[in-house]
Image (cartoon, rainbow, N blue to C red; front, side):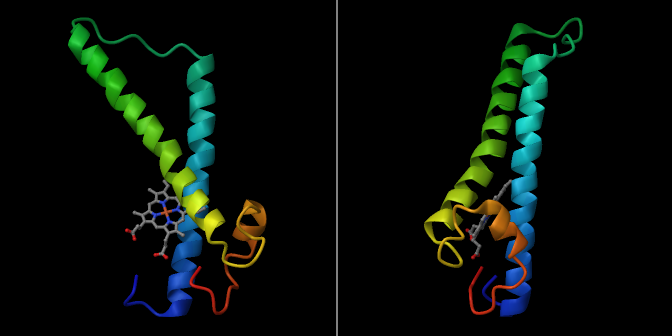
Length: 104
Ligand code: HEM
């Protein structure tokens, strides 16, 4: 990102933040759905180790889909673009486009 101009960089980071927050919301919705619905059975002939591998892989994926946006959110909360904006995500998103002079 260092090679880009400030306006482009601000727009890009704003898009990055709103996309990341969307990933967080959709992932949480998906987890609620998964916990309240029975998943389809594995195909006949699937081996036990394959089922376990699928569970482990999916658990890692779900963990990352929650952990990545939360990490970004905590970074931006620790270093708010403007005083007081860090914890106020909706304000942060709404003001994402007009932060002259701020790297974010
Ligand atoms: C699926 C969600 C997300 C993924 C996969 C992701 C991934 C990344 C990656 C790969 C970087 C670059 C790190 C580097 O420079 O080495 C980054 C930077 C950053 N992310 Fe995220 N992120 C996500 C969500 C978020 C969210 C939700 C926020 C804030 C609420 C956020 C805030 C930031 C910030 C402030 C930077 C530094 C930008 C800069 O100044 O270069 N991210 N993110």
